Image 1 (cartoon, one colour):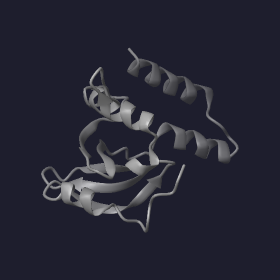
Image 2: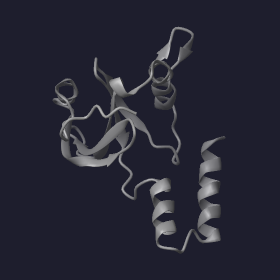
Image 3: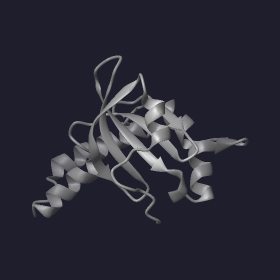
Amino acid sequence: HREVWGEDEIGEDFTSALEGKYKVEEGPVAQGAFAKVWRASSLETGSAVALKVVQRDALSWLDERNILGHPDRAGELDLHSGLQHSNIVRIIDYFVTSSTVSLVLEFCHGGDLFDYIEKKKEGGSGLPVATAARAMRDVASALE
C-alpha cells in the first residue's frame, strides 16, 4: 500500500462532484488501507451519509477492474448498488473521477461490526454468546 493522501483533503475533483448534493460535516472519521471516510449530509433530505473516498492510485489494476467492472462482468459498485437488505450498508450514490472512486453510503450511527468486536476484545470481555449469535444470524440473513 502506497500512501497517496496529502493533508485531510477530499480532492478537487470529488468536491466538484459533491456540489449541490452533499455537504461534508466532519472527517475523516475513519481510514483504511485504500480509503478515507467523511461524515456528510444530503442537501436534499438532510440525512447523514458517509462519504468513502478511494484513491485510484492506491488500487492495483485488478482491484480497479473488480470495483468498476469490465465488458464481461459488472463491478462491485453496480452489484452492491442493487442490494437492498437491512443488514447490508446501502450505496446511495457513487462518483468515479480520474483520481478517485467515491461512494455515498448509508451512515451507520453505531459503527460497523468489526469495530464493535474490536472494542469488546480490547475491553477484555469479548462478545457474549447471545450477541455473537445475533450478529451471525444477521450476517447470514444478508447472504440469502
